[in-house]
Length: 312
Image 1 (cartoon, rainbow, N blue to C red):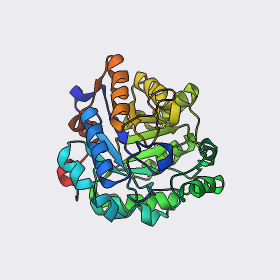
Image 2 (image 1 turned 180 degrees about the vertical axis):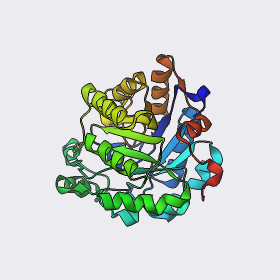
Image 3 (image 1 turned 45 degrees about the vertical axis):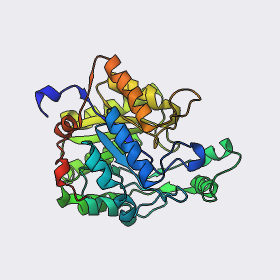
Image 4 (image 1 turned 90 degrees about the vertical axis):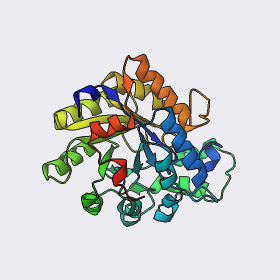
């Protein structure tokens, strides 16, 4: 990282994800056109990294086939300078071999990597909706009452080894304190290389909570384990999104927003776009007297390979 980029804050935008279902918001992008449009607008609003999932355009169901990603990846790359981050999380219902395929094929600058297994509860959302737009949504949410999102040491090794020679770096998603220790384990083994991009996830049922002390504890632990070898970012689920973003920015961290993580742009107000949330994150950063990182500054900070070295 060059001296000029120290203190710049990276905004990541997670455009659609696999958690929220179409019934929950009419603004959730589902089709390739919608995902591309939302991603490009988010980049124009200030997102330096775009974290991408794919969905079935007919019913909004998560789709982790490379073919689904191929429908929008080139369009986003051509229209924006943002670094593209392809999920290897996919959906908690998928096997790791399925989850890693898009990142393995397209060799992005960044891929997400979940750092441990957790209970992954979404079933509490069912009671908020009287009816659902598609038949798959309610059973999908209800089934999480008995769902463990598997990310074993073997699974993590598999993803790392599959992407070893592609020059892809990782957004290490840490849903709990133990996940930081798991990451330290892989660092000790030499299987991951600094600078580590640590994405702390707060407020998902099954992971660490969204209390300010939880955020501070995650930061303290990462500082102790990794020192100067990591770059910290946060995402807050649901209503906690911007509050946690503000706390992290004040602590020197980076921010992730987007409709994957929260559907809201204020109390009781659905976000009409990903770009709207990026704009709110930008206000927080600039209100604290800081600067938003450009895509090229983010590449320098995270030691990314460059958008010309991907396979899409």
